[in-house]
Image (cartoon, rainbow, N blue to C red; front, side):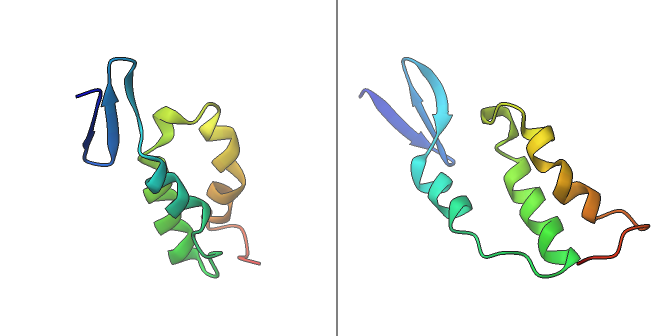
Amino acid sequence: MEKVLFLGHVISKEGVSVDLAKVEVVVNWPRPINIVEVRSFLEMAGYYRRFVVGFSKIALPLTKLLRNDNKFV
């Protein structure tokens, strides 16, 4: 076997990578409309942070929405 799918990851001789079907789910995720949905998205996307270069910089605007001193707009 050249590749094995295991718990949403593709394991091959090159190493561990993300299953592209899981990436498609994140890309097609509906726009969050409240704080609970933003938090849910960040928790789900955060699981894949090791595969995304600069994840913390990308997620920073969404993380700022979760602060108590900001209004959710």
